[in-house]
Amino acid sequence: MSTQLSAGGAEVTVDHENGCRISSLRIDGTELLRQGEHFGAFPMVPWCGRTANGRFRDGGVLHQLPLNHPPHAIHGFGRDHPWRKVRHGDGDAAFVYDLADPWPWAGRVTQTVELTAESLTLSMGVETYGDSFPAQAGWHPWFRRNLGTGEDARLDFQADWQEERDADHIPTGHRVDPKPGPWDDCFGMQNGVDVTLTWPGALELKVRSREEWVVIYDEQPEALCVEPQSGPPNGLNSLPRLVTPVDPLEISTTWTWRRLA
Image 1 (cartoon, helix red, strand yellow):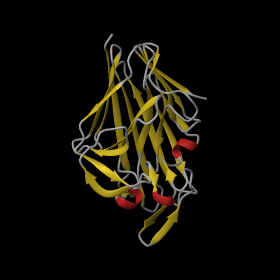
Image 2 (spheres, rainbow, N blue to C red; image 1 turned 180 degrees about the horizontal axis):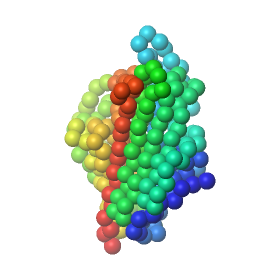
Image 3 (tube, helix red, strand yellow; image 1 turned 90 degrees about the vertical axis):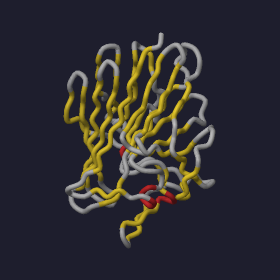
């Protein structure tokens, strides 16, 4: 079961039974997202990227997550579970997912999707039902490298730093000057995420967020990933963001497009 949104020449499909991922984003009939059960654009929650060895501490307590990408835990649980639809209009919808075992705390995640003729805004909120806990949230879109209409997409961004990572793709805690790709790397943008994808002669798409962190992944020939998130990979250990009863975690990203043809 999926939810359809439309506005102008834009169409979005939300597969809330499959991790509440955006399974399709079509502009004037052209699909922008890589297709497949594990692709599209999925929410990463309650953590983003890799958590080293699936372990993190909350105070003096050591927690072990399932190793879904051995030897690490990656991208959270939200993408693997059905979400419930709680609102659906012509151009907007909202969905919820309840955090439960094997996540150590009870809570709720809400994702809203808002579509206009020129933009898509995704928002996510993480709330606790009781005890405070560390968490992260973000999105992992797989944009098609080639739309079948000409040249491959160009990727343009200006980062203030790059998170140095070890051979196991875990940030070391050091910030370095941005390096040339190919990338499977986290970058910092102190004024907010701002990345442009351009399919020459077809479409320009900007990915923006108020958050400082974005992972860029372009090591596969089929797709480019631009992943705005609330902290760096392994952030449950290195930069925990505490969700409390009075202070939920809230994050959003807006994608805007401009036709070039």
